Length: 311
Ligand code: A3P
Image (cartoon, protein in one colour):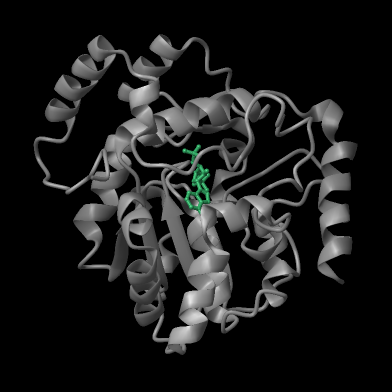
């Protein structure tokens, strides 16, 4: 099936399901709030057995997942841009735990029809990743983004993504983030969970800010971690193809495959800004102070070198 047909099928499936699309409530799984559809079939996700060659890309939502999926797909295809336009991101790199109303295929449905090595996306916190990923020693890339920019990005996303709980007003949203009440739970526990296991489980831990600061350096890090060796010219091309500008224009990477009943782009686009430090345009000085004080409390037991600005 060509990418075009797959895109049509995926978009059509969403259009067909639009009457069942709703802002799904969150149900806790081991204390982590997950969309009800995910929680209702949790055992199937937990039992998933990847192939040892599968690659896991794990993130807290809005930390740079799509960007990293695109880089990895291009690396695996030796920089072949056409090959990476074979289908939209969620078809090329399925979202492990996602469940949507039929006939939209779930992440597991898509994985079933793919041949390893597959690029698998997850937002699950470390403790909820199906244990077979670790038993099979799957390569795992974790991308972390500074809390304030991550929060701003998630706020805009929750406004436009009609399957996520209503974000409510900005000030209240900050508190929900701090209290770990958003889908996929606490940002603080999420980043700490993977940070603590990164050596033991050979997880490549990346920062969104470092990818912005020096994308070529980070693409090379990912390449080496995946035991690949591409020419300098192809690496340069991958850096260019995965720039914010290029990805925003690429219908196979910009999530324009998700129609309005789910992603309402008149509210905000998926490829929104792609910057470090946008939080300064949204936090008041009081909100920033309160957030920083709480951050000190929640992060006092680790030293994860986040940058909130690029100088
Ligand atoms: P903003 O909302 O701040 O613009 P995810 O893929 O995890 O959902 O993350 C989405 C965020 O990553 C959005 O952030 C999006 O714009 C940004 N993003 C996506 N592709 C990017 C790229 N190539 N370069 C920089 N940022 C990118």
